[in-house]
Length: 151
Image (cartoon, rainbow, N blue to C red; front, side):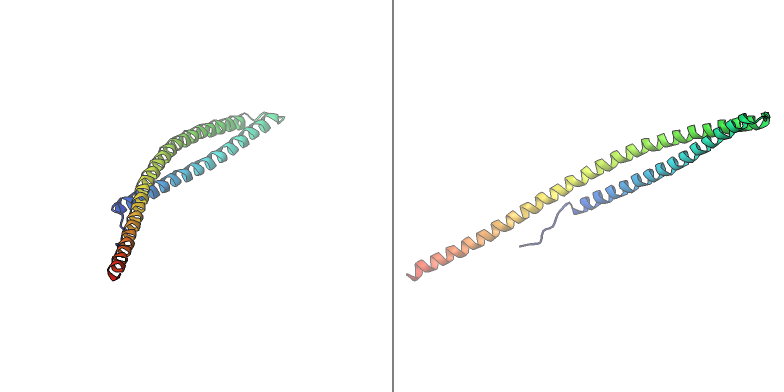
């Protein structure tokens, strides 16, 4: 019996590669999100430090107007950076959602071809069993005919 050969093997390989590439792109976006989230945490800690510094300046006996103005400006700047960072994270999360959907579609496409391969292999095995049974039946028939001729 001939060796099993799947006619859509190249298509299956292309689908596997496509899924792998899309998974890698998704992982890259997830790394970007993690990096941006770390930056956001750092900015939030800077903001907390600026608020604390502003409070400590206000508690001193002598009022340091230029220092308070500088700390207030620092706080405003950090708050703007935090908002920009949140917008960047939001954009990346939207991209992540799109890439995740692409990975799901790629996985489904690959599974369709793999199911076709499994079905083709099952048919191949069934055909092999049918041919084997046919050979055994022919051998049995020849033996039966030979025994009938001998008697």
